[in-house]
Image 1 (tube, rainbow, N blue to C red):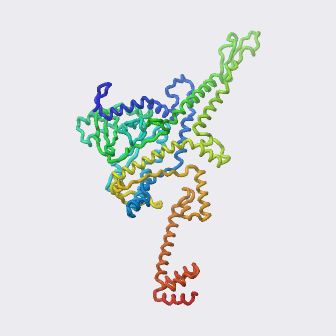
Image 2 (cartoon, rainbow, N blue to C red):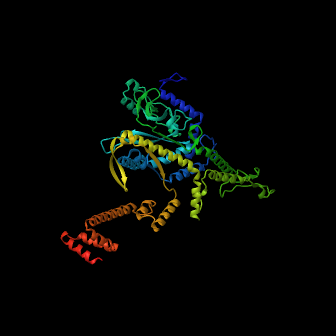
Image 3 (spheres, rainbow, N blue to C red):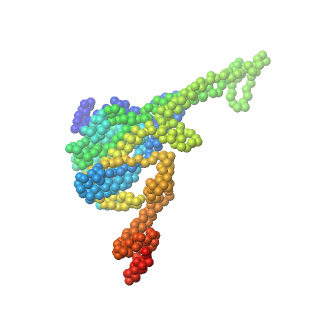
Length: 590
C-alpha cells in the first residue's frame, strides 16, 4: 500500500504508479488531444465553439483522408509464418538427428496453420481497422493477449488464447521514455469493470469479506478514451450492492525472465501476485508515427485539425455572408408608403401627392460583393492538405480512369508515404504471433487443434510443451495489394505456364484468388491423378524388376509407347500364360 501525498489516502502501489502514468500523459496534453481528434473523425468538429446561431458546416477532410489511409494499408493481406530458428542444414550439423529436424518443421507448419484459425476467431482483420483508426486519432495502437478459461474447445482441455484491443491511454509503461516494451520495469493495463465481477475475482483469490466490500464503484472515467467513454449508467453502487463500475489496474512485471502479474483497484489488491509463466509481456504496442524518447506516438489527425478548422470556419463565414447579403435590401420613402410587405402578389398604397415619380418612391440597395479569392483559398487549402498527406484525387478515386495503368501507378506511388505505418502494423502482428507462441508453449499442453491441409480442415493432436525446446522465428508475409499488381502477377504466371517453366499445378497454387473458379477442387483432382499415375509407375517398375534381364533389355529397346503397352499387357496376363508371352517377346522383338 502507498499513501497519497495530496490527501493522505491509502492506495495500492499499482494505483500510485497508475497516477504517475496519468501525470505523464497530462504533461503531453494527451487526453485532450486524443478526445478532440476522435470528435473530429466523428463529425463533431464545432464542439466548444459558440456559433451564436450561425451555420456550422462540416466538410470532413479529416475523416476521408484517414479512411483512405486505413483502406490503403489493409488492402494487402498479412500472413504469419513460423519457421525453425535453425535451418535444416544447421539442425543436421548440430544434432545429426533427422527426426528432430522433421519434428521442428512439422511443428512450424502446424503452428502456422493454427495461427490462421486463431486470427479468424479473434476477427483480427476487423481489429486491424480499429487499430489503425486508433493510431490515426491517438498515435498509438495496442492489443492485450490473455488466457480465457471459458472458451470451449470441444475436448477435455478448456480455455484458449484471447485477444482484445486496448486504448493507448489505458496502457502505461513503467519507463515512458523507453520504447522497447520488453525492457519495461512494468506495464500497467487499465480496465473499467463491473464491481460484481471484480468481487467474484477477489473471492476466488481468497480475499476476506472485509477486503471484498472495499471494492466499490467509482467515477474515475475522466481519463478513458473518447467523450462517450466518460458516460456510464447512473447506477453507482454501494458497498453492499456492488453495482456500477470500478477502475482496475493489471500490473505486469518480470522476475527472473518470467512475467508476473497483480490486479488491483484503488484500495484493494483484487488478485495477489501470480506467475503467468510467459517470457514476453502479453501487451502488444505500436505507433502511427514515432516520437523521440516516448512510447506514445504522433497521430496523423493532430496535424490535419488546424486545416480542417480553417476550412469549416471559412465556409461558415461564406454562408453567413450569403445569408445576409444575397438578397438586396429595400429602401423606401416612409412618408409616402405605409408598412412595406414582401408578400408575393401583395399590394400596398403609395401617396406621392403627384409630385414624385413612382420610380423614386422605393429602390433596392446594391449589396456588397464577396471577394472571390476566399473560395480560391478554401479550394487551395483542401487541395494542398490532401496533397501533403498523399491522398491526392487519383488515390481517392476522384478522377476519370482514362489511362487505367497510369492511374494504378499513380495510386501506388501515393501509398509510398504509408510504408512506415505499414511496417509498424506488421511489427504489431509479429508481436501478436510471438505472444501467441508463448501462450501455446506454456498453456496448451497436449491437445487437438484444427488446421488446414490442402484447403481442408483437419484435426491434429500435438504436444505443445515441446515448443519450449523448439526455438522458432516468425516471418510476416504481405500479399499483393492492388488489382493492378495482382493482374500483373497473374500475367507473369500465364507466361511462365505457356513457356513450360512451371507445371499446371504450380500455376494453380500461385494464381490470384478468385481468378480461377473452383481452384481448390482442380488442385485436388490433379493431385489425385498424379498420385494414381505415380502408383501405376511404381507397379510397372516393380513388375519390370521381376522379369529376366534379357526380357528387360528387349522391352527397353522398344519405343516408349510400345514398351508401356507391352508391360501393361504382360501385367494383365495370368501367371500360367506369362511364360509363353515372354517367349514371344524374345522371338518377335529384334
